[in-house]
Image (cartoon, rainbow, N blue to C red):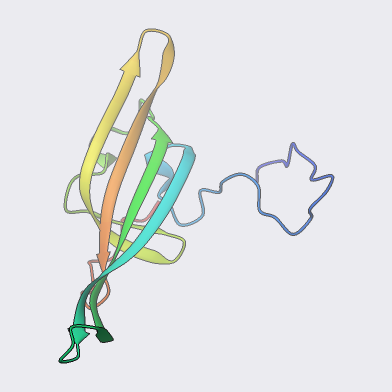
Length: 126
């Protein structure tokens, strides 16, 4: 179990830092994560052209993760088409990006999409 190395001095009702909860250990240390939920919409006009109703449909959530790359990841490295769960949202990986340089740690960024009415395959277990 990780040790907490920080103290929140003011504003105790905030969340600080990240957690690897739900992320396969083989993916490395989670540096950042984000989710973005969007939907398609159609405006319904009245005879004067004013919007009087909106139909909202086809909700999707885009997930983005940045992790430190583990050198022993091997065949456990995530691939496009695999599933990943973040913050109780399971999505299908649609992109895998690697960044490295001679003066920084190698990082891996995953992009995944969750469609509200599509059940993705179960994510890999750590």
